[in-house]
Length: 284
Length: 90
Picture 1 (cartoon, rainbow over the protein chains, first blue to last red):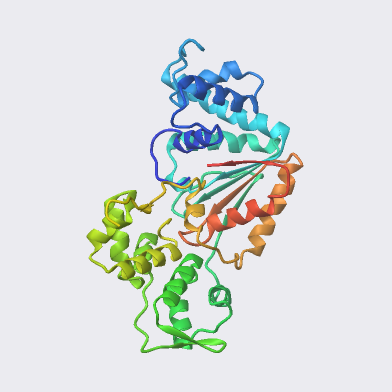
Picture 2: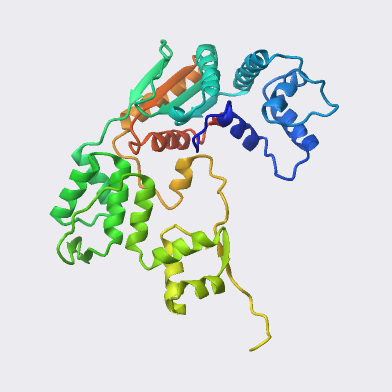
C-alpha cells in the first residue's frame, strides 16, 4: 500500500488496475475485456460480478451490462462479498499469499473487506500477512491468527548490519558508539546513518579499518526518510543544488537548460549529475 | 560548428516506477541481508505450510517505522519464489 488514502477500496482498486494491466489509452471496452479476463481466473460467473467490479473501477459498461439496481449500501456489501469470493476462487486453483501492507493507512471499507477475508481464511489455501504500525488497534483474534511484533535489534545485530555496509572494515570506536546510541536498534536508521557517514568524507580507509579524517561532529538521525534523503544530498553538495534545480524544472529537463540555470562550470555540472546517478537519486 | 544540430541529452525523472510497494521503490539502490529475524521468518514459513495444506492462516505483523516490516515480507516473497502460488499484494 504505497500511499495514504481515505477513499473507499482504494488499495484494492490500485491492485486490480495493476494486475488487469490497464493502460492509460485503453478504451472502456478494452478495460472491460481485461477486467472480465481477470475475473474469469477466480469465478465461473463473470457476468454476475463484472458490473460490480466495473463500477468499483469506474469503467462505463455501456450496453454490455444493465445498470446496477442497488442501493449504495447493497452495492458496497455485494462488492465486498465479490472481492472475497475472488480470493476464494483463486485459492481453489493454487495457494494464495495475500500481502496487505501498512493497514494503518487503510480506509474503513478496505478494512471491511479484510475482516471478511480474515474470517473466511480458515477454510482456504490462503496465507494473509497484514502489516501495520503499533498505533493501529488490530481487532483480529482467532486460532488461525498469529500476531507478531518486530522488536528493536540488539547491539550485536546492529553491528552486523554496520559491518555489512562497511564490507567488513571496522569503524572507529567513537563512530560505532554514535551509531549504536543514535539508531536505538531501528534497522532502517542503522542503514541510513551508516551510509550517510560513509558518504560524508569523515573517514579514510586504513588497511582493514576506517580512521577519522578529523574531529567527529555530532551525528544526528534524520527524523523522517525525507530528511534522510536531504541529509544524503547535503553530503553531496553542490550536487544538492543541481538536484533541487532539476526537481524545480520538472520531470524532464535538458542538460543545456540546466547548465544555463546552474551557474556551474560544465565539468562541475557533469560531475554533479554523475554523483546523483551514483547516489540513486536521479535516473539518468 | 554553427547551425549543425547536435544531439541534446535529456535528463529527467522517468516517472513513477512500476515497483509494487513503497519499499521496493526505496530499496532499488541496494539491500543488505536481513539481520535478526530468523525466528519470525521460520514462523511465517510454518504458517504458509499450514495454509498450503488447506488450513488458512493470518499473520499480523506490527512494528514501528523502520523496524523491518516490509523487509520481512520481501524476504518471505523471495523464499516462496520457487513455489507455485499466486501472490496478491495490496
